[in-house]
Length: 248
Image (cartoon, rainbow, N blue to C red; front, side):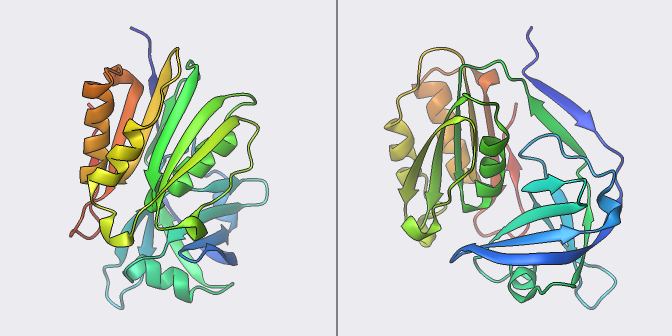
């Protein structure tokens, strides 16, 4: 059987980094560039990798949250992380308050799941929490790669542009923040997508119930091969620091 996903494991260690730059990409997305010599051997091979960020709480136990390494410049010892700004939890509040020179501890990633470049086309669907992974994926694709993205955001002001050599078609669904966990709008948008001929890989990342509904749509209604779909619940409605991996 053809191997679609290759898994790589890394030694887990914590790294102490410093905020080098901060900017607002959109009204609800903050970009933080971290730097430090401890990034010299940092590895992240897949666009949807996750690292742990450790936020101080004033106690011996920090708050931990998962985030995507948006970009890595190992030569410059710089790591970029994008923060979706929503209800102010510890990560969001830290990003809002962050200033150059502030410190942050990170851990991981534990490993990477690399998807083989054997497909004729790609479809990436994600909400605000998945835009960092989506953007990195599109920007790292080889020249001419056929990829469609469907971003689920609150409005035109939250749309992002990605610099890429791929043949990229960007689509956006606008729905209110309070509907982010409602599968209905996302399902209607997905149902309206025409899937090209040939082999295609579909990646989905959103609130868990949305991701599950979209995965079921492509597997059941569209008959897409199960091994060509990767879906993850990046967050779970009503639960802090929760996620749901849906890969078989």
